[in-house]
Image 1: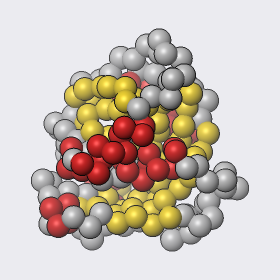
Image 2 (image 1 turned 90 degrees about the horizontal axis):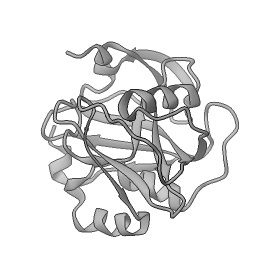
Image 3 (image 1 turned 135 degrees about the horizontal axis):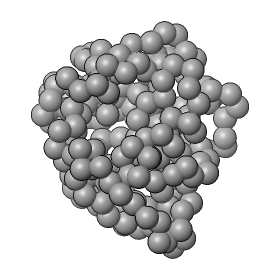
Image 4 (image 1 turned 180 degrees about the horizontal axis):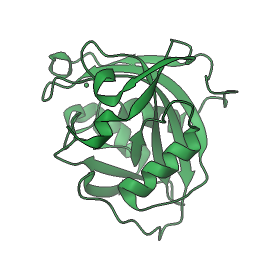
Length: 204
């Protein structure tokens, strides 16, 4: 088990209020425990977003294409601090200015690993220069590519199994941002659930 699997995450209720903590590993064991997470999208001046293909050693949805960076704040840690830390660890990027585009709750099971994703996910956006230097950690990231988000939405419908199950909701919040929430628990999260049988046989 990797060291990161023993890190603590913040358990939350359906409204995003903190209600305890658990290790990453425990929170992602079936049937899953709802916890706070973040998904970062780096956006170039032409509107394209940076996608990463998750490394083969990932315990949840390895080798799937996902957003630029994602992770979990430690209990009590700010989203901005946690997200910039992970941007540095995964991509060698940052710190960057982040804004929240929305929140949603999603649930997915990974048929390959049997792990579960049950997350209260804060979608964070950073506008970055076209020549942003990126130094991905091969233990985290297998590949990178820049893509138009409208094209990506269409491809998510055409070939969903090539992508992490949370990516559709992340791109939706980017293209259709909701008003920023106050405090740690944004109001009115949208709830998404992955319904494909192949994703639910056992899904960051």
